[in-house]
Length: 314
Length: 219
Image 1 (spheres, rainbow over the protein chains, first blue to last red):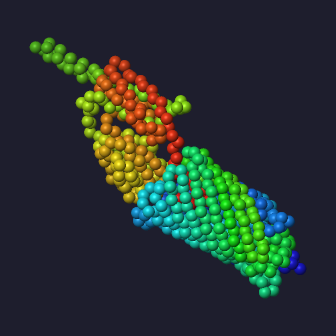
Image 2: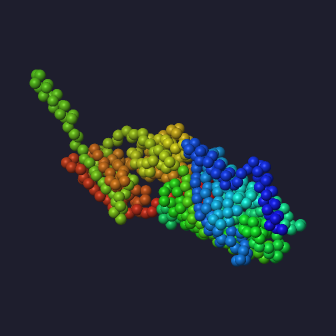
């Protein structure tokens, strides 16, 4: 019964996508990337700054599952093209506008493959001149993510306030508060009376970071964060979590029997990384993150993410 | 009469075309590991102040290319005017907090910025308020006799009046002050004088140009 409903739902979603004149996420991403690549030579000769980033990530619990039997590990390959422009407003204020085009490919969970296009607007204030002047930045980001399994498609809205200061030539400190809202389309109710809007989330987070230069071209970083709000945990039907869930939806990207449960929870996270600059334009890094979530219904789960990153700025 | 005139004219021509009696100083600078040190400023101060000819300081330039100051180190004679052309396609905001010269050039592009006069001797550290990793140095020299080492760690100061000099070395990453490098050197017009220095350099930490995804970046 569930499988039939899934097929109907998928067909309906596919039909809706076609009605909208849309093609697959991969096609849209390829078209956008092509357009961006055509624009690169023009942007490179203007007041815009360009960036290219790539990473390989290994996540030992992609679905945020509580029990070992539900945990799915996977490797993702990420790519990102970014472009932004700094517009000085006055001596101490500057406005940044920009955007990213990014893609994420999963090795096994291919339904989670996605492309994302986002726009950024931020205002930065610096108290004084130079690299050691304290700064604060307030900004907003809007992103549209398009997934291979389109029921996860969403709009992401983010408002953030960050502030920091470089203490000296080796130490750099900064912190950020962010409000995130993900708006996905509500799916049909799986359980009467319980919303199917499992992929829409609201959360707030606070992150503190410290960076230390260990040599002329290498630095280590440590970040601690706390996040409170909606979390989505995917597992096979789980009665305890079921009763605590604000929304439930099928999540076929993780298998035919997988359900996504939206819960309220608090996540504590830590991130440690080291990066190396082989040239002034590029950065190679590796990092490990550990997340510990305590959610409603005694749903507690952890995840560890290891990543290798490469960043290039023109 | 004609014979005397011809002789005088010949002597005048010979006098004008003969090389002046000038000395030349060759310097090589290496670090404690034997590696050549580029961008070291070599300063030759004559013991007799009269030897330091006070030529009119030239107008010179420090460019901004690929979001970096070019050259990284620029020695100039005190009183020099320096222009700061911007060869990048984005604007820069050049400043210095250094006691030898405090100044700020509000955001500009191209060659719009007025020249800056460096009228006090000392080291002037340059920065850009938009691109924090941009660092450059202007060494404002009291003596007109200076040079900067190339990538091979060598530099030559030519056309020096023969005599006694105090020769010093300065580099942005030097462990100790330039006073510790001072040496008395006698220069003669007979042959170039070569002197080698070994200096200790400390690591040069600079603000990274590229930040990772977890860093705030420069927007």
